[in-house]
Length: 397
Ligand code: PMP
Image (cartoon, rainbow, N blue to C red; front, side, top):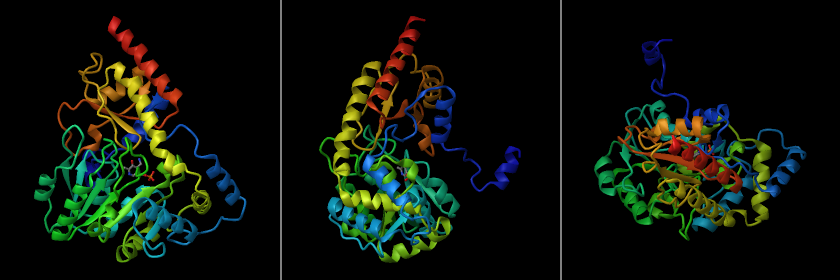
């Protein structure tokens, strides 16, 4: 099919393969250390794997309830009460999904009608905008601003209107590592009440928050609770991205609409994985509480290794990602972020993600790439050693 035929045929003509797949494939091809795609290179907790083995051998092979097994939904109720001091009804407000990706898609399909506007903050996780397009809506992209990539509340106030159906927020933020402050959430709540729009709050990194800060969930703000779909993912929390078990918390009337779509997208989510996670959470071995310190140490190691190479970092406050500005590195500074990521992967042996791909309209001359530090300490050290060697070779040329 040529380009104009594709333009006519495709529902998403300008979309290619997601950058995460592209960079991971390139990393494999060039034998690069993969700090691009967001997944740990270490194992999930042994108790989780044990629970999975047990559940696999205990006859859990058939369809679970469409909205998830009760034992897991009850654990989510407890988890939400513990970390956010919010009561949710596991029967009418919690739905287990096959990854947060499914929950995002389902939320958008459940809400967005032909011609509705959806506000998205760029740089944004790449699953949001295509879901809006497929639902017949229009994505309105607003840039995050400043070195901390924050929401500009004045620009947001100007951008929303009665045409706004949905606002998508993400905290802790991929790729920037920022958190949305409670005051900003309260401002969003006022706007949502005024214009009657809903909120998709992508909180998949909710348990990875550093420097003694606390992640404030959108559902902690009472005025947002009644209009928010809060999405979290066990893939991130339990170092098991391949399990694809996540959940959506939303008020009963919204959950009814959510489940109407969910039942015909995946219907249900992998039964033994749900049981294993429910068992693991019920035992409460302290895994979740330990996550902030666990990842903060890795972030600090990343900083100690990568700043001396010339990368300038605005320290990540949450997630397992770190943005790095490469404009002070002579061998890289002239390159666009895509060329920089390609060069690092193909010639330097370390894969990263360019940031421009997370924008509808990328800012000119932004020299930022994203590294994932959810890796064994030795992997991070090896990556830094490789970069140091290659940068030194370049300096001698
Ligand atoms: N939202 C964000 C911000 C993410 O970074 C990711 C995973 N990269 C997802 C959603 C999707 O999560 P899952 O793997 O559970 O589908």
